[in-house]
Image (cartoon, rainbow, N blue to C red):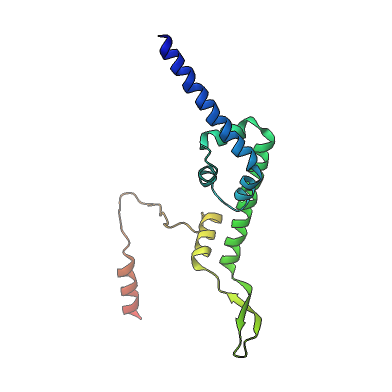
Length: 162
């Protein structure tokens, strides 16, 4: 029995050393972790890059209120940046581009990036879901009569009439 207890203690000590090493890596890389979150890197990827378990990451975040607030602020910054990029993509925007002329000189010019229809759809579906959902539900006023609408047939018959 005493051998099992010794083995358990040894296992516990090695786990503590691993935990200490991970905490040290986390502390040493805290600035990089915050910067990565600000740039939109996921917590999962940060944990992989720093060799820290996600459990430890969230545990330390819960234990340290200041750290938690700093990390939430970094994630919020990333969310705002992505929201801004989505809005720009939906509306279209200008960039400053460069080209090399036949004479070999570099010339800067303004290039217009056209709006993205996908970004517009995504934006509208999420910002105005009551108007921009994928399907429309119609309430049947007379439940005794069940009817279906075949849009293709309706369009064909409308075209034939005109």
